[in-house]
Image 1 (spheres, rainbow, N blue to C red):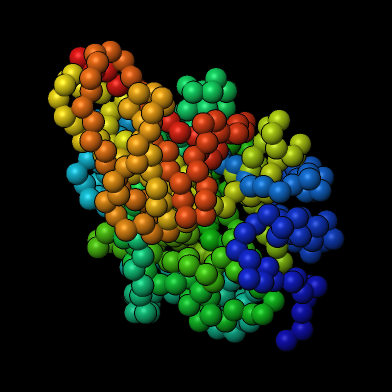
Image 2: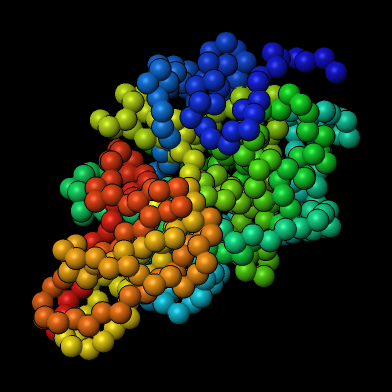
Length: 430
Ligand code: MTE
């Protein structure tokens, strides 16, 4: 087969985006990468930034709410509604087990949940990174039953919005950031079942020239600041796509709920939630690097602490902890309590959590309730008997197996991504 473009070196053995991003942008300049829906000006400014770039990307603003952006019931004791999105209340997770029940799982929709039928659904793989053949244009299609007939795997993994914890940039650090004002409830853990994306790519005729894989959702086109950015899509380096990514059709033993991507979604363990494209309808497999608004304008870090034109695209999530408690919860003085919470990281397992019940003056180690595992959270608890009436703050600080420890202050960025600082949870003792 003759190559129609200059073969791009594969990001061999690397699932990160930082170095590859620079490479991808240079290829765009040389005419060897495609960038649909991203202006030339924007790309040039990103390219200018790559000299200094060492980091990650940022996400998108919320769109005007559709009539019913979310299908499932959103009882106020479980969810805080935020535009087209719904945040899980941490107090509702108390006693729910390791996996977040589907009814309680947060929802992040750029527009609205499309209600699709599995029997009508097709997944189309296409592009210059396939060897060609079956369809006239070289595209290969899979139906829902085709996918379910392939060897399946089950994997426990969190999905977390890159902006989870964003509101704490304002409440704890006095920083003004844009985007949905999540507290800590834009995260959930589920047991996902599906087919490894790598398996489907190989069956579709993956070529040795492929470098990027771009899944696209079947939800409505996303309009931001009056500009139609098209349907939600974000490229993944092939190395990550072949590593641990799933085309998932089950969530906690049930078919995916409508809001979480029925009939099939992409599941990219440990990476920012935007990578896990819901309602996937097609996947471009490309021999050219790809760019979309979701790895250029959004999901990079901008601001004084970052390269002038933004960081490299965001990949792994940071370390976080949360108490299974309402903000402002009340406790009786002298009464023994057990405080529960969960901690997680995109870089490794969480094997150590320290808790303070006096606003950070003293700390003790929490008891872990899960065997620490990468890609999911570790549940923990500490006993506490409040001794004095009055207001106090509960703090939890996690350390992951890669030595990443939650800092006191998160490095701010204009779109409020990747908040990782220890959150000060206010409570009152009466
Ligand atoms: N996929 C599509 N097609 N449309 C979307 O709006 N939102 C993304 C991602 N996949 C989105 C999407 C974002 S930003 C997040 S955080 C996760 O889905 C949220 O997944 P959930 O709604 O199942 O919790």
